[in-house]
Length: 404
Ligand SMILES: Cc1cc2nc3c(=O)[nH]c(=O)nc-3n(C[C@H](O)[C@H](O)[C@H](O)COP(=O)(O)OP(=O)(O)OC[C@H]3O[C@@H](n4cnc5c(N)ncnc54)[C@H](O)[C@@H]3O)c2cc1C
Image (spheres, rainbow, N blue to C red):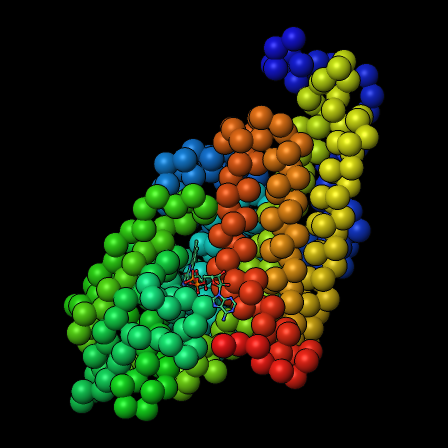
């Protein structure tokens, strides 16, 4: 029997709805929050799902979706004022999950723009800077990037950052390189972190794409998050006016405040990525016929599905509680780190099970799962690797730092 015939064979049993929210965590949202989440889900399913595998294969970003994306009202959820959407950090998490459920690259585009770049300005800018930059960012008219990682320093940026800045009159001179910077090939507002030559403290700057001494080269040949346009930024005697230095970023501790917030967002991406993979796998299992019946009816296939659902449900519950802590202002670095490490490990496991369930078809991009498997690798490592987050939690629970 051909694959087409076997997939389209008429079913003689009723298939329950495919739903990765097994414990009904979405019941905890109020009416207006539910409406936003639904708006995001509809957009992702109708506008993004049909085109994204093609963009992923071509390593391109679908710029045409940005105007509609902007109308979803998801710029700056959890922030107050400056044109932000408002709402709770828990809602922000649900949005992150919904985006990644369909595509982790689009989720990352949003996370870098509104979370890392917008969040740096929101947490570290003064009033005038927030008024100047945030409203156009919240409308997605100006897109942001966040430049922390360097070619020679990734995990160790807190102590080892090599990009430097020095004050000369009313401006600063910034020199260095930033690697892996999401959105950087087209972003207007680039947050750049640099160490001051005299004080050795880390400062934050907003650098425009047309600023002299600022250039970006696209990073090619990625095997994950291929829709995200990552850049290698070079800053060569790049002059930045004092008014564009983030006035409330005085040391790496301020950078860390931004990372704490966004790390939780990435953990939500991992949950969404796993949830999407589970739902694709379940749908496939009910349609794929082998030995005369849907493979969903085989014990070992059900075992894979239930393992996946267990991971999805467990990580959803972790994130639910983390979102509550975040909304109450009680979330610590170690809380966020445990969630990021645990959820990304479980995501990686889940997308692997989904790939296994699809057999050979699991490696075909047309069946989507290949994209989830690849993208989970990047989510696993960016915004703090599992090892870094483990060391943060390890220090908190033992009182002993195992960082070298
Ligand atoms: C797709 C993608 C998008 C990204 N977007 C951005 C962005 O927008 N902006 C930005 O600034 N950065 C971005 N990054 C960078 C990302 O945050 C880093 O890749 C990450 O922090 C890890 O740094 P590294 O890749 O240099 O790995 P390294 O730091 O070189 O680590 C390599 C390995 O060594 C381990 N390791 C390192 N030190 C220790 C230690 N002390 N103990 C135990 N293990 C250790 C790590 O856990 C890892 O397994 C992005 C990365 C990717 C892949």
